Length: 143
Image: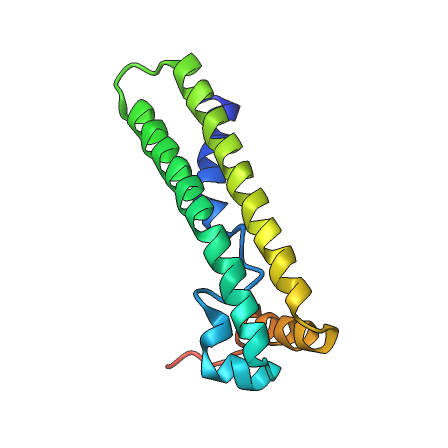
């Protein structure tokens, strides 16, 4: 396997973690987040509007990423590797991920603009706590 194909495979498996900046789903409607951030009804409505305006684009872009991933796996599963086809599909997958990331980023920027600085900082602190691995006390091996 060439270095480029290896890179494409690694990128394929870590692609799902690219947009870990916000909680999953419609977080602005979850009572614990609404309360924690003290989101107003107007803010929730604005966030919902941003999500709805982005949803169709995000679905289409995610589908393109998924289809490219399936095509890449299909090419890699062939007994005879077509390096040019693998490279072409890998490049398309990389570009599709880039387009998806760009759209997600634009949605994040729009959503961020709805939150006040203290709300954003509270959310980031909460997410940072969730992302850190839990500290476990050292256990002694059993005899």
